Amino acid sequence: MKGEKFSGKGMNVIKEDYPDLYESIVNLNETVFTGKSLDYKTQKLIAIGIASSSQDSRSIKKQMKSGIEEFDLTKDEIMDVLRVVLLTSGMPSFVKSVQILNELF
Picture 1: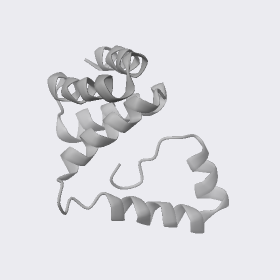
Picture 2: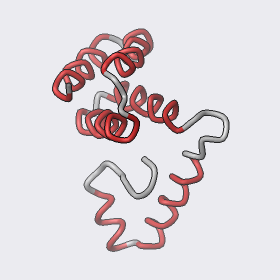
Picture 3: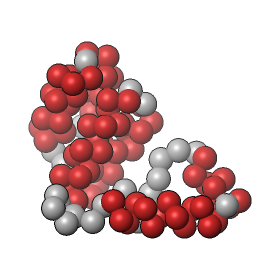
Picture 4: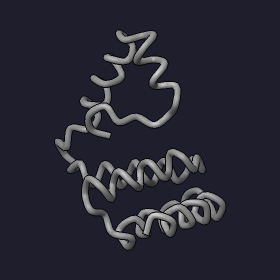
């Protein structure tokens, strides 16, 4: 999520039609993902867990894919996150996320 990588088709509209709002979102993104106390890799793993809990397939895939590309996350590292998702968000979130994980590996 560092830089200007946002999920959601609406972000292109915001970028084009509301550049001031888009700039605020970019700044917020940079403020959130600082790596001050938790390194950025850990923050990415948290983002994968949150996306997985939401059951939004597109978001889950984007978060996992960017984590794999940016940090060379392994299937086992992501699976550790999904185990927590199973415990906290239940079977539907877990199963959907595991299916996406298997597509990526």
